[in-house]
Image (cartoon, rainbow, N blue to C red):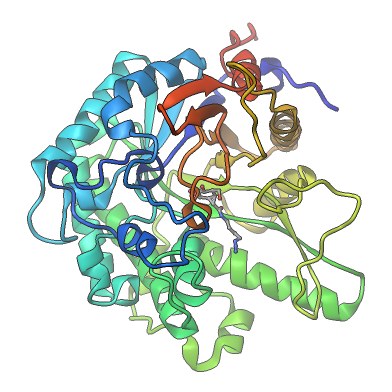
Length: 442
Ligand SMILES: N=[N+]=NCCCCNC(=O)[C@@H]1[C@H]2[C@H](O)[C@@H](O)[C@H](O)[C@@H](CO)[C@@H]12
């Protein structure tokens, strides 16, 4: 296995850890927070595999200082977190809740006091429920409400926040949520899903306009989950299926954002389900961004019969995702070849494994290997000329893993949900050795 060290990365490279509001904060009714679609979804029987919710999660809302100390102890330079829209604007429009903004102001100032760069995500899936009551992202108005929410956050936090990402993984917020139904609001309607995807992209564009006005000195971008996609065999049918999957999963978001157009082949295939696009929408969506966040976990091996293939010579994480580090460099080189790109951050990469607590240790060798091999691919892509400015491990700590509840652990830090103890896993110790290493004299 390639052993990587700090000198495999450029001097400017940022190492960080990432979380999201609904997955770690808990305190879902504290200080004026309104209900989100995930509060609703978790109460619907059968939606969450262990019947849990984010009501308590990692109790980060109350333990935020301890957690900032924990992040700082990992030697990272940056912390990627998200703001809960329902804390800031409980109904999703109209009145702003100052107590909600107070929490994030405390958090950001706490980061700065510890020398941590705040990387803020405005939307990591916790849509205020009142907006869903009138259609959610399938309703075009939500895009405009999102921009006003972005204004409220940026006006309070300003340029103390180094980096503002508008969305996290719009594919998940639309297709996984409105078509596949695995995530909140749990609908199964492709037309609504494609409308939601369009309005998420439109909301991104409207928010970029607002952020350019309010925080002109901050870096502004967005975050996509992207896969490397491989045909199962060399047959033309499988190659065509892989091309379509790439169009529907990757390009459906990359092309509007970076080229101002939807992929024509996929658009054609969607027929009457395609979204209603107003004349200026794509110009709004394609506004220049200062970075593109890429969340990479695995690759897709696609066959014409639609079956997800599981190559037998690969290993798999506890999510059943293939461990395929080369897919990350393949993806980055493909992005460089096919698009005019802003700098990239790997805003999420990590793995769930069945962790066991042994005294006060967790020997998560598989996760260490996963991180090492994927970071080696990032270093390789950088050597090949891809402008990658940083890497955020998913996740700082075990947390609420959406439809899997607390049954899947992605953290570098183990969370004992019984007493909320945080325990560094071997992967945290390993990551500290890399992220916290002195930058080599050039
Ligand atoms: N069917 N199906 N799905 C295939 C694609 C699912 C992709 N899921 C992600 O990327 C989510 C991202 C999220 O930001 C974070 O909040 C999640 O905790 C991690 C781990 O799950 C990843």
